[in-house]
Amino acid sequence: MAWLPGAIRACYFLAALLFILGLKRMSSPRSARAGIVWAGVGMALAVAATFALPGLGHRGLILAALSIGTAAAWWSGRRVAMTAMPQMVALYNGMGGGAAAAIGAVELVGFAGAAVTLLDGRSFTADGQAPGTAQLSLAVLGALIGAVSFSGSLVAFAKLQGWLDRRFTFSGQRVVNLLVLALAIVLGAMLVGGRLTPPLIAGFFALALLFGLMMTLPIGGADMPVVISLYNAFTGLAVAFEGFVLGNEAMIIAGTVVGAAGTLLTQLMARAMNRSLGNVLFGNFGATTGAAQAIAGAQKPIEASDAAVMMAYAERVVIVPGYGMAVAQAQHKVWEFARLLIERGVKVKFAIHPVAGRMPGHMNVLLAEAGVPYDLIADMDEINPEFPSTDVALVIGANDVVNPLAKTDPASPIYGMPILDVAAAKNVIVVKRGKGTGFAGIENALFYADNARMLYGDGQAVAGELVAALKTLDA
Image (cartoon, rainbow, N blue to C red; front, top):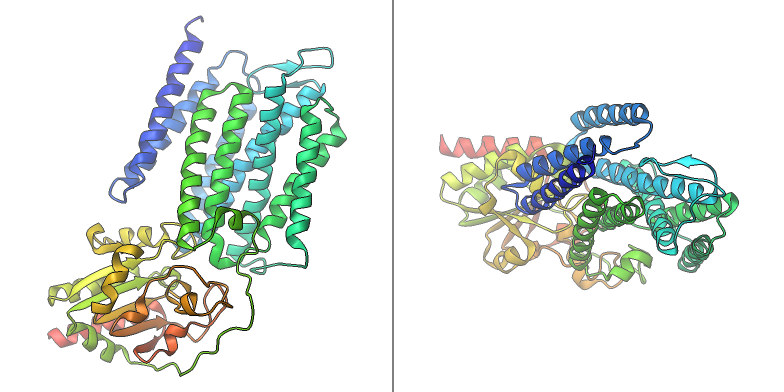
């Protein structure tokens, strides 16, 4: 049918519009859910239009793969805990990068002369059509970036899942990493130059995958939000480049949007941790520069009843959630406690650090799930000037993002990272299960400060005790 390609292009255009509008709506917590639905509808439309492409082969295999992938995603998405969502995002992102790399591999093998029928029905043989330099360049570039995203995301998943040590370093690591990348680029240039042999293609992909592994292994857990965002950008770029190779408008637009959004988010995350993008790519994240600063004093415990009284008669209370709150699934109880304080006339706000939790927006999602109004949630730059006039700062599960050593100890792995100035509050109450360190693996000087008290216990149980104590006061 002559009208079919035009109709497909129209569907791709509508899908792209839904991608962009959906992403725009995701920028606000109020409309994020609708934005996800819009983008999902756009993806469904793009997939349906692709099935109508003239000459598309292996429709049965494609449909079977879609069915298996959809079932696995539905099952895992329904079962995954909120605390495990960061590693789930890393895993899914890696799959996207791996898919882009696989498309590049099929293209390169097809260009090399192994009779391969691609998804759009084209076939290349030894005496067939020769690819252009631009087409080869984009195929190689997309394959390189996608392979790095794939292997790097798998390492990020393993680290967040607790399967790998948080950091793996050795002497001269940066030089070795750059050499691996340089060799991959050299082999890629040879492929673009027309030396399309199976051993060269295999070597190129092996080096690209190896670089993704080696780039991610030395990264500390405290920097993982930046890594997830970075690989998200990589995956988008890889998909866009392979879209140009296939001539698929939906892939080009979707990949470009994801790549641009991921790049901007990576820059924002890096800025929030006071790191340059070059340091994110090639630096030894979490490396120390000398002997750690000694911490004076001792941790001073407090009972939940005393903490509840202190906050009940305060004028201003700022609640700082962190990953520990997510682990304890305490967000609902924390919000119940905050509502009781508000009913007593206490001014309550929630303070969110840009990299709190294990991924960008982690805490915002938890608070939104509990029903916390958006106007009570403040970001770091907004809330920091208010801490000196805050009567009580309640820290529940946060650690590295409130550690004063980030400002005072050059030897600290988080030195220079902007933090929430919780220590400036008149009183600080820290809810923590024990005396262990944070994800960066360092002691927190805040816990030993004169104005800080430690409320030990599981986050949800402690929040329940605070609620009960507050209700007793009102009885």
